[in-house]
Amino acid sequence: MATSKHFAASSFAVEMDSITVATFSEVSGLQSELETMTWEEGGNNEFVHILPVRTKWSNITLKRGVADHALWQWYLASVQGTVQRRGMSITLYSFTAKGQSFESLRWNIKNAFPIKWVGPSLRAGSAEMAFESIELSHQGLAQISGGA
Image (cartoon, rainbow, N blue to C red; front, side):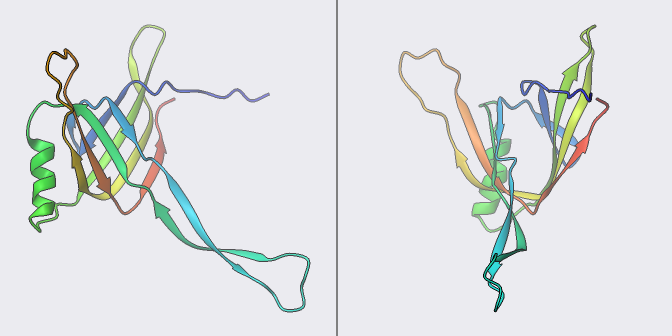
């Protein structure tokens, strides 16, 4: 009987253009959907053909504690008409029994650029961390197995 491996979603890194840029607290939107069309064949009433059309990629959202202006400046470049597309990877890490980390999975993202930036919610008297998020459009991703 085959055993399956499960990975914790709590230890990951985000790289842009092969440089680890920041520690993010959350990544969402690793999603793909195959759009289809139906074709009804004349004289065949038993079923309808469903044919693949194109792949649709969801936007990816990165969330982190406010640390510097790097994400804002990348977004601002898009707003000002100078879209800076970047190759990215999101790496999920696991740990050995001795606590050593190793790469479990990696998602390589093609030509990502920011389309939305959300600043922190500020509240007087709060001790909560200030978070920012950036939403990225891209041209596809590939999932690659790590050393697990």
